[in-house]
Image (cartoon, rainbow, N blue to C red):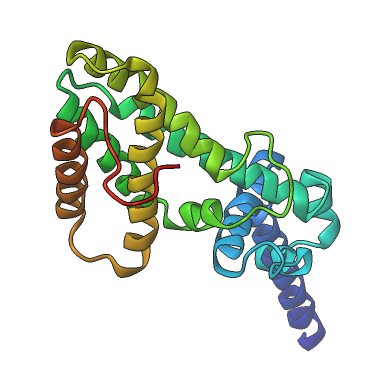
Amino acid sequence: MIDAVATDSSSTSGNDKQRRTRRTRMTGAERRQQLLEIGRTLFAAKGFEGTSVEEIAAKAGVSKPVVYEHFGGKEGLYAVVVDREMRRLLDMVTSSLTAGHPRELCEQAAFALLDYIEEYTDGFRILVRDSPIPQSTGSFASLISDIATQVEDILGREFKSRGFDPKLAPLYAQALVGMVALTGQWWLDVRRPKKAEVAAHLVNLAWHGLDGLEQKPRLIGHRKA
């Protein structure tokens, strides 16, 4: 009788384990997504060099070959994480530019970047690090340049209507977007003041700077070249 009970207990235990295995087994797509999320978290916290395939695999509860199977290694996983974040940020900024008034467009661009920093903090931390490997979508600097191109057309039209040289719009677009991006990096850590106030101050500087723009700016110091 005891042996029968033990056998039944062992059989039940084995069935439980099988059921748990079936419940936790993932499809290929689910496993890939899990590895991406784990990699994203680790890369944000430790950087590329500080993260190992062993740690990624351990967090996912799989063996190292599974990581290699999906991404070919740490470099492949990192590249996919970075590409996804760059596309996400560019899409957020591009889709935000819907207003007609140039000042509101500045507000929308500032909010889009700050929204991304707030909602996808890990992603932004990864993007602002120097990438150790080439990316198919470029670097953070090239991403900022892509965003500036969106602003460039808006500034060009505004410059032309105000009698300024529209050929200078790319320069001012880079300056404005760079200002917001660098402020965003600072705000990422301090989180003071609140997001709306940060956006208001950024637009205050940008808009009133543009509003008082000289058609032919001059240098007032002794250096002229």
